[in-house]
Amino acid sequence: MLFLYTQDIEIGQRMITISTVGVPNTIKKLASHKLQSTLAVSLHAPNQSLREKIVPSAKAYPLEAIMSDCRDYFQETNRRVSFEYALL
Image (cartoon, rainbow, N blue to C red; front, side, top):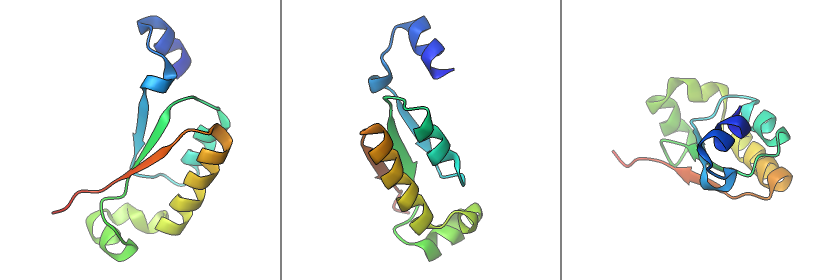
């Protein structure tokens, strides 16, 4: 779908960043498509315990699993991954 969308509006995949809070198994699935997009992961906190307080669904996808999937994304696509979190 991203490919069709980028053709319609004539924007290259390298100009698109896909942002996620992290849903189990989706980063690996995204990597399998070998897109040329950058991945941005919103962590919302610098550690797992604070993340779980801010984003309750974070319990289902701990930081260690996210980091592993992000390494796999980078190795599969050779595209950088950026990490974000807000200071509250």
